[in-house]
Length: 314
Image (cartoon, rainbow, N blue to C red; front, side, top):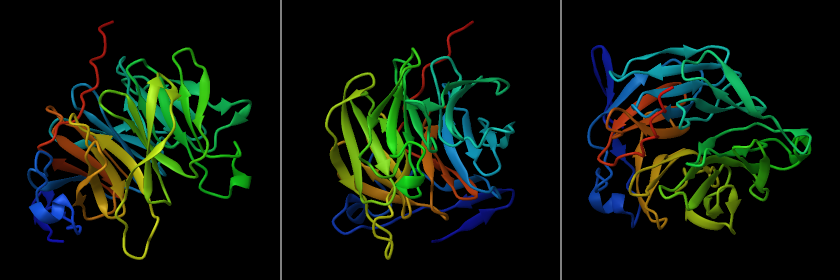
């Protein structure tokens, strides 16, 4: 990969992995109507392990350093600063319609105030048993929360006995929706919220489920198969993002693999480090923020992400 640095600002030239028979192979370094539209910028580095990118209505982005139990903020100018300490090892997160941050933490799903000063617990158990390790989530327009709860060790050590995908309704009721995906990791909704994507680790097949009503799913199907890192068959995916066209962006060992709504691979955006998650943000929601090991990157895009609703005035 070609890398160049401008004094005071790390700038990385992007490349695309050319996959046989893929649109990326045919189009070279550019995915039509997707991008990238320019050089990838390293926002910040020297973290322990970055995760959980999330943008509010104004495009201000938060991301987490999970082992350090800290959350950071990226302002409109691309500068990062500490937003919250002692975050209970926050991982995946997303803003809700009230402007609060719904987040997966150690053993629970919680809601943090917009200023980061207070929090309340949404759920920390199911049927009297504690969760394994809530990992990632998505908030629907009804205000409910879908989240993954994998168990990366033997199932016998799982607190729930299975890895699951759950839904927390607005009245606080928790329902287990999926229990047959061994390592569910990333999760997201299609723009029309009629499809729930579940991104497992340790397998090639990414899953899609029809949403029949808020918190209710139909039978799952394989949405797509990931291209794999050579020598690491079945490595699977991590966090994911969607754009307004319904394209799905999946963080993988190869980079961010991009698929259209029918599951056809459009290309792979590579970065200097393997990504863990990605989300759109910035003032026009045309920047893909990618957490990747010890760094966070901003990728200018032609595609546009889905802007969360503005918080209601109090």
